[in-house]
Length: 192
Image 1 (cartoon, rainbow, N blue to C red):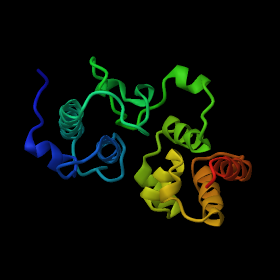
Image 2 (image 1 turned 90 degrees about the vertical axis):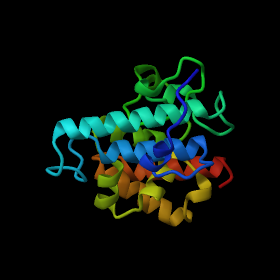
Image 3 (image 1 turned 30 degrees about the horizontal axis):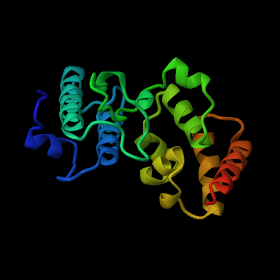
Image 4 (image 1 turned 60 degrees about the horizontal axis):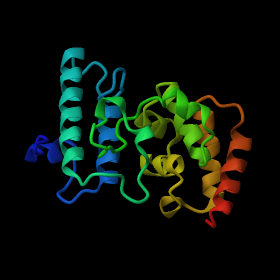
């Protein structure tokens, strides 16, 4: 029988009762990037051993909460290929979690959403979402929506174009204009 989630797990990840797998995944991503090695949020404030202990507690809380959710991916949730290696479950109740570099198989497969290209590049360079938000002056929720292609959370296309260009430039991509154009074309194909 899997571990029952401790009531403090929700608090540790900043979640409320009834949180969805998507809520859990986003909360875990935020927490992991906040406590990641070299994170400006913790730089010089905590020792490496303390930071690693906090990351271990976050992962354990995430795993207990993930196991407590019903098995199988929910409609619209990412597949298990995107789940972090340290949070994979043997029963198939996998949810995507920490921001981790994509597997080699995922790199070979072209993403349907150009935002996934941005995410992959950001993660390969070790840039935390919070740092990118400060650099671009774009709210993390918008940056996440860009990466996920979540049209419900995205602003008008004129803003999206500027956000994509700023994002691409902040992570050191030369083809920012082309990427913005491709992203907007992709949104049009989705009827957004």
